[in-house]
Image 1 (tube, rainbow, N blue to C red):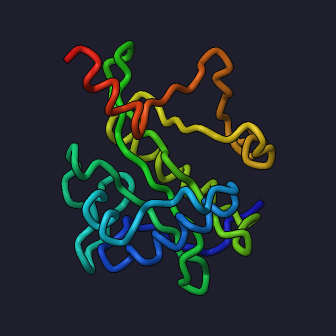
Image 2: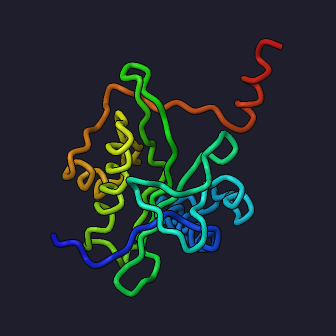
Length: 183
Protein backbone atom coordinates (compact mmCIF):
# COMPACT_ATOMS: atom_id res chain seq x y z
CA UNK A 1 0.00 0.00 0.00
CA UNK A 2 1.34 3.42 -0.96
CA UNK A 3 1.40 6.11 1.68
CA UNK A 4 -1.24 8.77 1.14
CA UNK A 5 0.04 12.37 1.32
CA UNK A 6 0.38 13.52 4.92
CA UNK A 7 2.42 15.62 7.31
CA UNK A 8 3.70 14.56 10.74
CA UNK A 9 4.88 17.00 13.38
CA UNK A 10 5.16 17.30 17.14
CA UNK A 11 2.08 18.73 18.80
CA UNK A 12 1.92 22.39 19.78
CA UNK A 13 -0.09 23.91 22.60
CA UNK A 14 -2.86 24.97 20.21
CA UNK A 15 -3.31 21.30 19.25
CA UNK A 16 -4.57 20.28 22.70
CA UNK A 17 -8.28 20.27 21.74
CA UNK A 18 -7.43 17.99 18.81
CA UNK A 19 -5.35 15.68 21.02
CA UNK A 20 -8.20 15.40 23.52
CA UNK A 21 -10.66 14.70 20.70
CA UNK A 22 -8.41 11.91 19.37
CA UNK A 23 -8.01 10.46 22.88
CA UNK A 24 -11.80 10.35 23.25
CA UNK A 25 -12.20 8.71 19.84
CA UNK A 26 -9.62 6.08 20.79
CA UNK A 27 -11.34 5.46 24.12
CA UNK A 28 -14.65 5.06 22.34
CA UNK A 29 -13.07 2.54 19.92
CA UNK A 30 -11.72 0.62 22.93
CA UNK A 31 -15.14 0.73 24.66
CA UNK A 32 -13.69 2.86 27.50
CA UNK A 33 -15.07 6.35 26.82
CA UNK A 34 -16.20 6.71 30.45
CA UNK A 35 -12.63 6.07 31.64
CA UNK A 36 -11.22 9.24 30.04
CA UNK A 37 -10.13 11.66 32.75
CA UNK A 38 -7.82 13.77 30.56
CA UNK A 39 -8.75 17.41 30.14
CA UNK A 40 -7.22 20.19 28.10
CA UNK A 41 -5.64 21.52 31.30
CA UNK A 42 -4.06 18.19 32.26
CA UNK A 43 -2.76 17.64 28.74
CA UNK A 44 -1.28 21.14 28.69
CA UNK A 45 0.60 20.40 31.90
CA UNK A 46 1.89 16.92 31.02
CA UNK A 47 2.95 16.99 27.36
CA UNK A 48 6.20 18.54 26.11
CA UNK A 49 5.05 20.69 23.17
CA UNK A 50 6.88 22.06 20.16
CA UNK A 51 7.06 25.86 19.98
CA UNK A 52 4.60 27.63 17.67
CA UNK A 53 5.68 27.83 14.03
CA UNK A 54 8.77 25.70 14.62
CA UNK A 55 9.25 22.42 12.79
CA UNK A 56 10.10 19.46 14.97
CA UNK A 57 10.95 16.13 13.38
CA UNK A 58 11.21 12.69 14.89
CA UNK A 59 14.97 12.62 14.36
CA UNK A 60 15.40 16.07 15.95
CA UNK A 61 12.57 16.70 18.42
CA UNK A 62 12.33 20.41 19.06
CA UNK A 63 9.95 20.47 22.01
CA UNK A 64 9.89 21.62 25.57
CA UNK A 65 12.12 19.32 27.64
CA UNK A 66 10.50 16.23 29.07
CA UNK A 67 10.50 15.83 32.85
CA UNK A 68 8.81 13.74 35.55
CA UNK A 69 5.83 16.13 35.53
CA UNK A 70 5.85 16.59 31.72
CA UNK A 71 6.90 13.14 30.50
CA UNK A 72 5.07 12.80 27.19
CA UNK A 73 5.42 13.95 23.62
CA UNK A 74 2.80 13.69 20.90
CA UNK A 75 3.19 13.32 17.16
CA UNK A 76 0.22 14.45 15.11
CA UNK A 77 -0.46 13.31 11.57
CA UNK A 78 -2.39 15.55 9.17
CA UNK A 79 -3.99 14.05 6.07
CA UNK A 80 -3.91 15.31 2.48
CA UNK A 81 -6.56 17.91 3.40
CA UNK A 82 -4.39 19.12 6.33
CA UNK A 83 -6.94 17.76 8.80
CA UNK A 84 -5.82 15.85 11.92
CA UNK A 85 -5.98 12.15 11.10
CA UNK A 86 -3.98 10.47 13.85
CA UNK A 87 -1.58 10.68 16.75
CA UNK A 88 1.18 8.85 18.53
CA UNK A 89 1.45 9.79 22.21
CA UNK A 90 4.69 8.51 23.72
CA UNK A 91 7.33 8.80 26.42
CA UNK A 92 10.86 7.58 27.01
CA UNK A 93 11.73 4.37 28.81
CA UNK A 94 14.93 2.52 29.61
CA UNK A 95 16.29 -0.98 29.11
CA UNK A 96 18.55 -2.02 31.97
CA UNK A 97 19.94 -5.02 30.10
CA UNK A 98 20.84 -2.95 27.05
CA UNK A 99 21.63 0.23 29.04
CA UNK A 100 19.77 2.19 26.38
CA UNK A 101 16.84 4.52 26.23
CA UNK A 102 13.81 3.70 24.13
CA UNK A 103 10.29 4.86 23.43
CA UNK A 104 7.10 3.52 24.93
CA UNK A 105 4.13 4.26 22.69
CA UNK A 106 1.24 4.93 25.05
CA UNK A 107 -1.37 5.42 22.34
CA UNK A 108 -1.46 5.15 18.57
CA UNK A 109 -4.68 6.19 16.90
CA UNK A 110 -5.75 6.85 13.33
CA UNK A 111 -9.29 7.97 12.68
CA UNK A 112 -11.39 5.25 10.98
CA UNK A 113 -11.99 7.47 7.93
CA UNK A 114 -8.22 7.79 7.48
CA UNK A 115 -7.25 4.14 7.93
CA UNK A 116 -5.78 1.98 5.16
CA UNK A 117 -3.74 4.95 3.91
CA UNK A 118 -0.45 4.05 5.59
CA UNK A 119 -0.82 6.63 8.36
CA UNK A 120 -0.38 4.23 11.28
CA UNK A 121 2.76 2.88 9.65
CA UNK A 122 4.01 6.44 9.05
CA UNK A 123 3.62 7.32 12.76
CA UNK A 124 5.45 4.14 13.82
CA UNK A 125 8.22 4.81 11.29
CA UNK A 126 8.68 8.31 12.71
CA UNK A 127 8.97 6.90 16.24
CA UNK A 128 11.42 4.23 15.06
CA UNK A 129 13.52 6.96 13.43
CA UNK A 130 13.69 8.81 16.74
CA UNK A 131 14.82 5.67 18.58
CA UNK A 132 17.47 4.97 15.93
CA UNK A 133 18.65 8.63 15.87
CA UNK A 134 19.23 8.53 19.63
CA UNK A 135 20.94 5.10 19.49
CA UNK A 136 18.03 3.76 21.49
CA UNK A 137 17.30 0.14 22.20
CA UNK A 138 13.65 -0.42 21.41
CA UNK A 139 10.18 0.85 20.60
CA UNK A 140 7.43 -0.91 22.48
CA UNK A 141 3.72 -0.69 23.22
CA UNK A 142 0.75 -2.73 24.38
CA UNK A 143 -2.28 -3.76 22.40
CA UNK A 144 -5.59 -5.11 23.65
CA UNK A 145 -5.90 -8.87 23.13
CA UNK A 146 -9.22 -8.50 21.30
CA UNK A 147 -7.84 -5.95 18.83
CA UNK A 148 -6.96 -8.45 16.10
CA UNK A 149 -6.76 -5.88 13.25
CA UNK A 150 -4.10 -3.93 15.17
CA UNK A 151 -2.21 -7.08 16.17
CA UNK A 152 -2.06 -8.22 12.55
CA UNK A 153 -0.93 -4.76 11.45
CA UNK A 154 1.82 -4.64 14.09
CA UNK A 155 3.05 -8.10 13.16
CA UNK A 156 3.11 -7.06 9.48
CA UNK A 157 5.64 -4.32 10.26
CA UNK A 158 7.90 -6.62 12.28
CA UNK A 159 6.60 -6.27 15.84
CA UNK A 160 6.65 -9.40 17.96
CA UNK A 161 4.23 -10.38 20.71
CA UNK A 162 5.87 -10.73 24.09
CA UNK A 163 3.90 -13.71 25.33
CA UNK A 164 6.33 -14.39 28.17
CA UNK A 165 5.48 -11.06 29.82
CA UNK A 166 2.36 -10.12 31.78
CA UNK A 167 1.42 -6.47 32.22
CA UNK A 168 1.14 -5.31 35.82
CA UNK A 169 -0.31 -2.10 37.19
CA UNK A 170 -0.99 -0.38 40.48
CA UNK A 171 -3.24 2.69 40.38
CA UNK A 172 -5.80 4.74 42.33
CA UNK A 173 -6.36 3.39 45.86
CA UNK A 174 -3.89 0.57 45.27
CA UNK A 175 -1.14 3.08 44.50
CA UNK A 176 -1.84 5.04 47.67
CA UNK A 177 -1.87 1.82 49.66
CA UNK A 178 1.43 0.67 48.17
CA UNK A 179 3.05 4.06 48.86
CA UNK A 180 2.21 3.69 52.55
CA UNK A 181 2.83 -0.04 52.85
CA UNK A 182 5.92 0.31 55.06
CA UNK A 183 4.82 3.37 57.05
